[in-house]
Image 1 (spheres, rainbow, N blue to C red):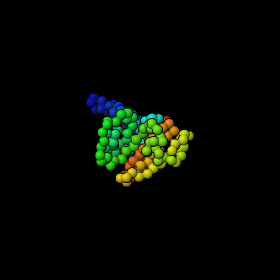
Image 2 (cartoon, rainbow, N blue to C red):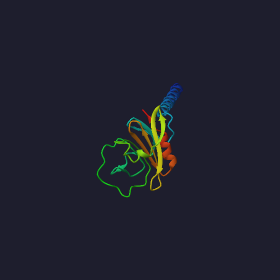
Image 3 (tube, rainbow, N blue to C red):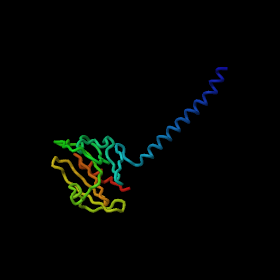
Image 4 (cartoon, rainbow, N blue to C red):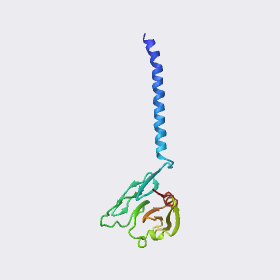
Length: 166
């Protein structure tokens, strides 16, 4: 009798295994589709109606006294403590922020090349900081400033090239 039960339970176990595998594959597919077409190692961050892609290893708002202290993206920072961090750490970062006055904003003034992003006017520019890091800036018509700073100019370019307007 035990032989008959084990032969009956084998098809059930096989059916459960197949169903479980199918569910796991469906979940994996759904998670991949939900991520969109982002390259691996990249995360998308948004603020002020703008989205950018930054390295996945970067943390959010790793700043002290308003200065990035490790590779980070800076968004939604309202107030900065009244202190100075000198010398400023030599790290890579991206920032999305509003500018009170684009004409007086030192980062925004380097964005002089007019471009179209999603049918809207934007300006882009770049330079090198005194420490040699590449700085790229995009200014979106609504006074949103995106800044990317990196040892590797290709990283800074990739970040500003990823700008999307919501």
